[in-house]
Amino acid sequence: MNEPRAIVIVCDSLGVGALPDAADFGDQGSNTLGHILRDESPSLPTLTRLGLLHTLPSPVSDVAPQSAHGRMAEISAGKDTTTGHWEMMGLIVDEPFRTYPNGFPPEIIAEYERRIGRKTLGNKAASGTVILDELGEEHVKSGSPIVYTSADSVFQVAAHEEVIPPEELWRICGVARELMRGENNIGRVIARPFTGSGRGHFKRTARRRDFSVRPTGETVVERAQKAGRGVIGLGKIADIFDRVGIDEEIRTESNSDGMSRTMDLVRDSDARFLFTNLVDFDSKYGHRNDASGYARALETFDGELETLLRTMRPNDLLFITADHGCDPTDVSTDHTREYVPLLVAGPGVREGRSLGTRRTFADLGASICELLQIDAEGLPGTSVLSEVNR
Image (cartoon, rainbow, N blue to C red):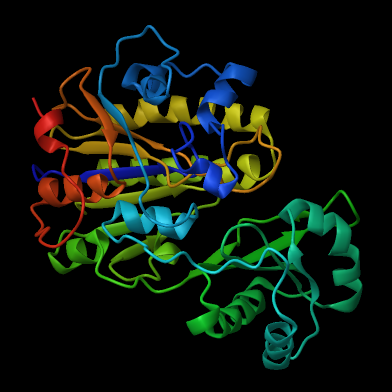
């Protein structure tokens, strides 16, 4: 009960300002959190107290932070979920995963259709909600799954749950995962089940599933498992690491479900590494250019975070971060190349400690290794523990 635990919450897509190389990705001027604050003025008393607003390029709060706070730069070649999470856990991606901004080559689609025994629709880069309006009715009539991609390294397959049940959708996404390897290597294949009837009424469900490429090296997650620390992945964490290093997988239906299940574990579990991804920020608001929805989701998270902080044990450390940006005020609906916040909170954390700008997301993984007494030899990153502990 007295052993320290690492509680990591990834606010998926909560970037805090453009990285120096953002223009190379078409993301100059992006600032997910800053633009939401500017346009929507959400009330975030807990996050403000922890120092989130002080991680922006120009702090917009006079409230003195009561936790350790800083921002992390990404050195991996990309701005996607897999790259961001892997770097957090000490695995740098030097070569970016392939992208297909003009759709997948005909020979790939032909082979995919042969393997699944169905024709497909779409095969282009598109917003997930827009393509449902465009092709949803045709899909329902034909039974052909909708295949699409984006500026990110993803092969997405959408299907109505009454036309292709989720279990079958997951199976044909597994086929795509096998196909998109080697020279066609893509970061993730994503199953996108939906329900509803008629244009404007189709709605994605919580039975999404991600099929990530297997990690190309050993991560902090895997080392923690080998060291017997007990690793629980909530949300899409297990998917992102292809379940390598995960002792227990807990799927979640929403941000609030993820927070509720995390709090249950904080109260009752002796697993020492709790790793949660809150995907709604990205999938429901960032990619849909819904700044007001993003702001409301942040307000809800802020209230839940206050409850979580009260449930923590004396030796627990809470790390709050993100994996990339997805500026909802941007002209595109794609991820944005941004710094991410690093907040470290807990009963033993020094108040108001600025962690500055960290060179890499891997500083998070290095900190977890030190906290949980895991061998970090050969891993990148610098632990922040000496700076945050009282």
